[in-house]
Image (cartoon, rainbow, N blue to C red; front, side, top):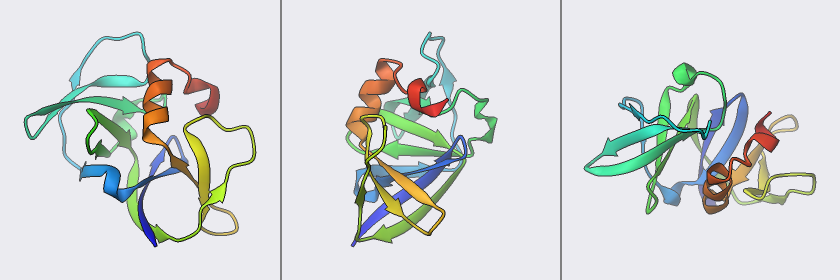
Length: 135
C-alpha cells in the first residue's frame, strides 16, 4: 500500500505520494513577489531554505489554510485541507487531463482524487498551462 497526502484546492481533490513531502504547515509566512504568473504567490523561508509558493486556483488564497512543502524541490503548494490516505490501486486517467495527472484514486463511488506528478505540475505552472484545467 502507498500512503498519499490528499489535499483540496479550488474544491478539487488532489493527491501526492507522501514520501515526496517534506512537511505540511498550518502556520506559515509568505513573502509576496510580484509576478505575471497567476499561480505563483511568493516565496517562503522554511528551515532556512527558500521555496516558491504556488496555489492551484486564481481565487484569493485566504481559504488556503495549509502549505504542503515538497521534498527535494524548492516548491510549496497552498491548499484548503489536508488528509493522509492509503491506497493500493491507482486507476489510469482516460479523459482529457493535463500532463500532471495520469492516474487517480477512486475513494468512493462519487469521489475521485487525481494523483499529481509534481515535476509535470511545476513545468506547467512555469508555462502558465495549469489554467486550461483549473478553470
